[in-house]
Structures are given as C-alpha cells and as structure tokens.
Length: 128
Image (cartoon, rainbow, N blue to C red; front, side):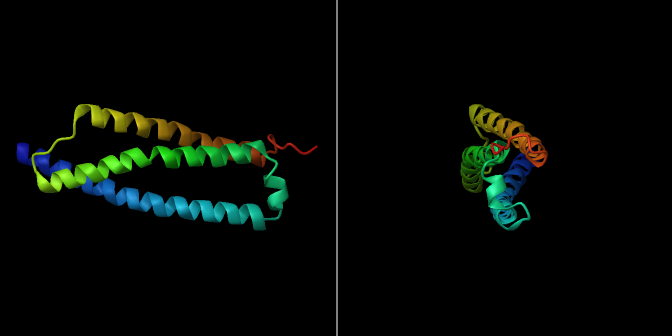
C-alpha cells in the first residue's frame, strides 16, 4: 500500500512540474496577445491606458504570477527530493502553505474576468 502512495506522490510531483512549465508559456502568450489587442485594436492604447479596470486586471494578473513563484519552487524541491528518496513526503506545513497560496491565486484569478467585463462596459474610464 505504501508503494502505491509513493508512486502517486512521484506522479503528482512530475505533473505539477510539467504544469508549471505550461503555465509560464500560457501566461507569456496571454500577456503578449493582451497588449497586442490593447495597442492595435480598434479602440487603441489611448482608450485602455485611462481605464482603471484595465490596470486592475493587469495588477491581478501580475499578483497571480508572483504568487505562483512559491508553489513552483516548492514543486521543484519536492521533485528533487522524491527523485533522491522514494519515501519522501512533503512537510505538512509546506503543503498547507502551498494550498493557501493556490487558493489565494484562484480567488484573485477569478477577479480577472470580472475586471474585463467592467472594462468592456466602460465603467472604469477616467476620460469624460
């Protein structure tokens, strides 16, 4: 039974590491496409640069990106520890910290579409 749990932990750590690589690539693509749309779209940069919800959306995206650093580093540490010791189990406080940060990321990430919807309706515009 313990062997099954160890094997599951190894697979979970490897999956988390692969997902973190994909997350970085997707985040970069989202930023690139988002700024391209803001600059080259019909409304142009002059419209978006004075919208509070645009900046709130970018801020929320940046906070999610910064918050994801700690769990990614922990996943890498766990992967290295598992490769050296198959009976490795992360410390309870480590998993609790990662879980709390991932929960905070999910909450902040949920605000991004709300900010986008408010921006699309013109609620945050500072121009008259």
